[in-house]
Length: 347
Image (cartoon, rainbow, N blue to C red; front, side, top):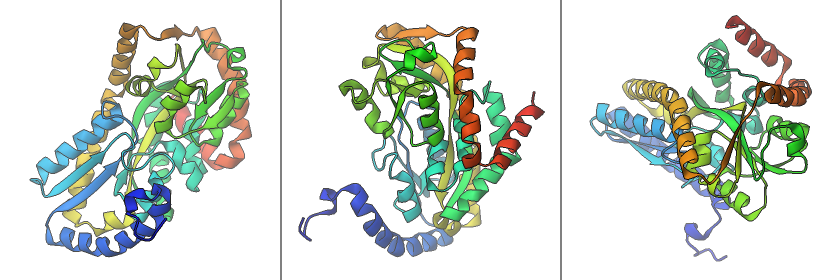
């Protein structure tokens, strides 16, 4: 490749580290001066899911509130569906300043040095969304977000996408049904261990690549909340969806620490309040969006939908229970104990 080739022709991940670091060095002081002067501030918010998902709708609400309350002075540019960056490179892009805000799944923080976030990946840990909120809206959730500062990130809050279901081209109702299947997973040791415990082979793929991988047979199945399954068109390439509710999928909203510190106090307060309201909205609609997607799936008629009995769910839970013990040291025993204590308080 010649030196004259435009950046658009350079592979995104190769270009990212050098070009965005240079851009950050030159652009950040300008962003600081603009914020201090009360002039226009542009916030680039990238995420990997569709606009119609709870995350996408919450991001849109954040944009609307921010721009209305700042009279358009603070502009939020949304990039859904991995338009800018995908699962593999979005956090690096944020650290380098190529984007300003992300809402990555909690699983992603494990691979950048925060395995304690993989608590949320443990199978059958949460019985209901209220259990999750007990963590994310309590002292433990705050402690987790504060730790992100070590990697140049500022954590601002959490929101839900609900519970995950299993899909494949056959019903997945018992451990034996998983035998030999290649199951797409996020880059999480906990989720990979879960699949191995069930007898499946975990295959780590970016979310944006999942539907194509299912269609071409690179993988046989996956796990997702129903809203993701529907909006990504996975029902067109998976014949069966089993309502296992075996795990939780949530997100943390994070910003580039230098960008956040560059804002005036008034601007960070405005953005923080808009985000809190957007997260509350997203959390309120998460269950409704999954119910809406389930109704759409039933109407489409392309995918058989299977409900599990309590006995079947108990068998799956028993099969993956060793994952909790096996990953305790990686996650951290103190974090595991803190999580259990917090959950017991609401029992």
